[in-house]
Figure (cartoon, rainbow, N blue to C red):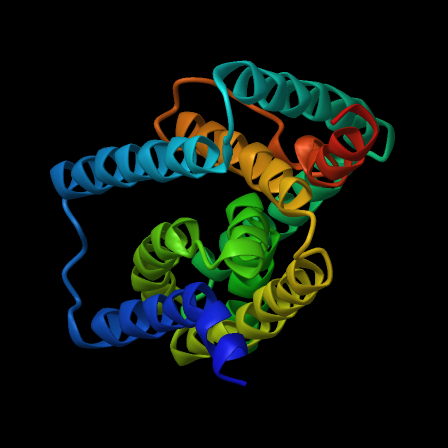
Length: 247
């Protein structure tokens, strides 16, 4: 039980970020200035770069040759994951969810009294569909590396700060599906990590790919490159398979 609670640190931080952002939004009616928003974006992007590359670096082990082999496997996993994700239309599905949320926001902006339930559904869609939430939950479950979810907690908190002025208190309820969705992924990955405890190289391969994808999230946040992140999610499955057959 203690280990399960420890593995949920990232998700609990994410939930706390949403609740704190919402409460601050209810109390503080003044919007963030453009300069403040720019500062937060740069800071969040920088931390995401650091924690993504740190996760990949910490997943490499052994000699230089072995570390290079691990990186090659990670790149191959990303390539195969991208192909699979595109065939499964994962990014298109993610875009549809984003478009649905955008339509809800537009509809709420056009009325003086938007329904609280719309705020719940909008934020639940946005917060649960975020690739960083899936990547962070996987790394938290496999190795207790909760920092990507800590970054997401800040992102979601700032988003809630703005959404709660539009939709009202219903936005706070979006913390519940985040807890259920990310918590389930985290606990599932923690169970897998225990099952394959004798094959740490398989776990490390997933973390190395997850770290590279977290880094890719930073490029999107900083608007340096447009990346179809959802299409790369199958890479997390290919990494241990390639490690098993090629390692």
